[in-house]
Length: 469
Image (cartoon, rainbow, N blue to C red; front, side, top):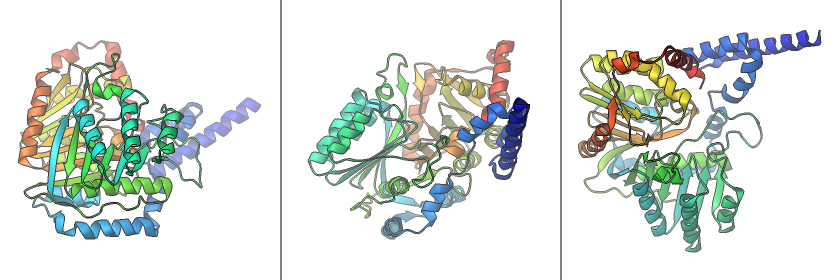
């Protein structure tokens, strides 16, 4: 009798949760997957839904809308000083991205594409060593390894010179970061904070779904870094278990640095309810520099800004669309857009790792390959090591950032991308990707037909549950 009552209560709770999904879910696929699982297997699915089911970061939205003075003052100063540097794109698809990202395109920027971890860390350490006023850092992952300790040493040295240091990390991504690491930074005067997926007043122990996946470095308001590389030895290819690591980052100068800085400030304000003081909000445009849009996206946005960024770049491509991503789990909108682009004659190429680090994600991506190849899309698997870069080349527009082509990056994670509509930068990204394609193997229909029945079954199961990942 007691067992029956408990099962009935669990089932009722599952039905209530399913109704909540139906009323508040963000995608039809996700709503269907969650609702069916909650009704059929509530004992298993309810705990998962409590942890991973939320799709809107409402607390962040409320914090942004409250109009509290410190954040408002920074936002006002940021927008006023940026007015002379605002660029209005002639192409409507670029204008729509500026509206979606709530940030303007700016002119007078210099962009340097950094290939792989050593180039990125060399540039980051160089900028930190030159810092005179402040350093802002936000990474999804920090490791307490040789690379992490080298960063720690340089930040402490910066503090000893009187430089303010704001050090932010994602509490889930950096869960293995030793407390001593942060204590040493704080003892030197660095200000450290986790991003926090919950407010201070309303603690939700199991709220683990949201992640701040951004990688941001800003030094003195004059230089910035953005891209796919976290802080750890593996990102420099120094982890023997993982092997060579292929990644991309971008170094920025000019008004786009103020835009990147504003993204950091909003995140810091959410976590600490204060704004870093004495930041440089006056941009320094570079004569003859290029246009750049800093495009933040995440679950606090009214619209699906992550998915819409990918969709707009795909749908606007006329000649080429090259995408490099470590995790490829498209929704129906992205999949259809890619197929239509190939069918209208666009050179559509997808670059993914041969060996991924997440089997479920690898299986899910594999389930889409046959129908994509049939539509004329070229799919290549990078052989030398793990490919982790997040790069899109749509005609002469390059996008380099933190977002993967998967449900988590498009709807659940906080991400940031630099969109650069510039022929010279696009040519450099083209050369970089051509080298990657040269070290990759082309996926063929014949190869996919040789998959075992078990492999094909696993890919279909992975694809079925992908909307709730």
